Every structure is written in structure tokens, then in C-alpha cells.
Length: 396
Image (tube, rainbow, N blue to C red; front, side, top):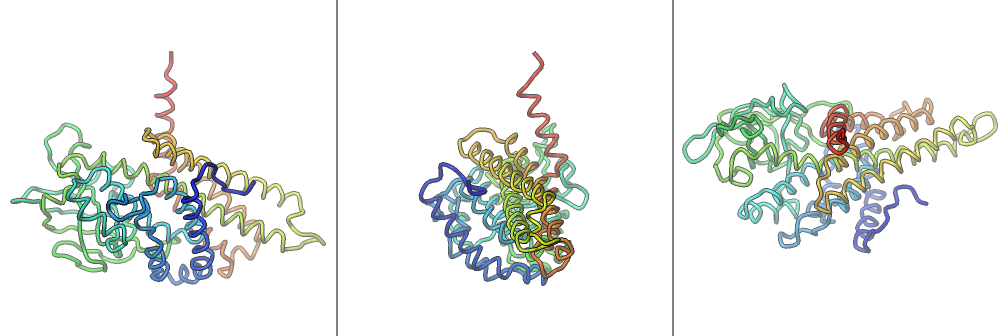
């Protein structure tokens, strides 16, 4: 059995994954650590992904994409994250915005945005969090007020992956629709902007890059609205008050994506640990032949495989048209927790060298924690999973 093998793939899916794996091995892994330490945007890698058609992987063929499934996309993300997790973040936010447009956009919005998103000409980012709220989406304060034929938005958004490099942001803000539920008083706006920092449009500012312990290379930013004017035609789906449910649908597939990233990073950590354990010798034999290290390798491999299979199940459930919040939550929770554990075990196998910036495991050690909090913290996932399990197993 080969680790992270997926049964039942079509020849097209196998060819796509083979191509992406070659791209990762040849174009990403050799430069990832250098670019990550420099916190440099991977321009050439992103251009290579554009040429491979990865920005349009799930966009329907009628809009110029490849029309592939969530499973194909998740497996591609797993491969990319194995090379460098930051690069997978660049396509993830883009994919979520494209997915939200495909599911919830008006026909005019689909025809206008999707063909250019498929080529990578338009790059997507999505925005829910604010400085004062993360997982508690009901607490957002950024507000859109009707004015003339459109709206004026005021407020501050936080933690935008691709905040500067993106040219289309799906932003969740408050709108007063008059409903009793706070969740039906939220609207998703499609905010177009040029790439860059500073005041990119009148009333719209990207202040600068947020410095992070890991997840470097990709830009993470704030987005500040100050009497920013936007047309009513930029409301996703054309009708205000549906934003929360549109965003939650996007986050559901985003959690499958985070699971895939966790699988990819764990897979790479496993590869590095197993390789090092067979090269390094102590007390006259390979450290892989010491029982303590051998047990660690066994646990690492089991966790990598379990997380992969859970991620595949969540993607296939969504592709089948079924509700998958339980499966996506489980996959995200398991894959992110296992990823952190596998990376730490690989780090321990490397000993003192794992602490050196010359070794790749040092980068993975700083990247893995982001997956514990991205797309909802581990505790949020456990709440979702627990509530859904109680729904499915009621007291009789």
C-alpha cells in the first residue's frame, strides 16, 4: 500500500495529480524554504499554476474551467501543501470565492467573473473575520448602509489571505434587512479592487502585510472600508440578507481544503522524518532501527493515512450533493490535529537539526499551527461535530 493512495480515481484525475506532483517536486520544493524565509510572494510558482489551469480546476467548462470535483481539488491541494502550504492558500481563497459564485451568484455575476477567474486573471479572496471577532461571525460590525442605487460600507476586516494580491474579495458585512435573526441581516458583497497595498480604491485601504510566525510568502492583510461606495449589483446573488448562509457554504468546502492542507503538510513531514531516520546513525545503527523511533514512524504513518481517508470521504460526500458539515468538521479537526502531531514527531526525529533553518522540518513546524485555527478553531469543530452527532443519535 502506498501512503495517501485514493481508490476509484478516473484516468483524468490520476493524470492531473501526476502532473501536479511533478510540478511540486520540480518547481516548489526546491525553492520553498528560501522563499518562505524571505517571506517572498511565489510569483513564478503562481504563474506555473495558472499555466496548469489550477485556478479554474473546479469552474465549469462553460465558463472556461476544467469542471473538476471537490475531491480532485482537495487531492491537488494535498499535493501542493506537501510542497509548500502557503501556495495552497493562494488557490484556496480563490476557489472558495469561485465556489460561492457558482452556487449563489446571479447569472450575470457568473458570466462576468468566472471566465476570468478560470484563467487566474482575477484572483479571489474572502473575508469574514474582524479585529474583534473570528469564529463568532454574529459579532461582525462592518456595515453596509443603503445610499442611492447602492450601498456605503464602513468597517474593518481582518485575516484576509491574498488580501493584497487578490482583485476580487467576497466580504461579509451587516445590512439591516429588518429580520429578527442577526444571521439574516448579513450580506456578501463582491468587492473588486486592484492588487497592491494602500488606498487601492476611494474608501478602500489594504494597510499592509500582517507579520506571522509561519504561513509566509502569501500575504495576509486587513481591509479597511471608509465610506466605500458599491453598487447593489455587487450583492452576491442579488438579494441582501443571505450572506451568512452563502459564507457558511463556502467555509464548508474550505474546511475540506484545510483538511487537505493538513494531510499534505503531514505527508511531507512523514517523508522527511522517515528519510532522516534511515540516514542518521547512533550507537552503531540507523536511528530507524531503534524501537523508540520505529514506534514514532508507525504512529506518524497511521495518522497520515487516517487523515487522508477522512478528507477523501468529506470531499466525496459534498460531491454527492449530501450535507457534509459533520464529515468536513471531522476531517478538518482530525487532519489539523494529526498534522501538528506528525510534524512534531518528525521534528523530534531530526533532533538538533530540526531546529536549524537549513532543514525543511523547521518551516513545517511553524506552518502546522495555522491549520489548528484556520476555517474555525479545533474547539469550534468539536462543537459542530458534537451537535451534529447528537442530531443523528437522539435519545429514544
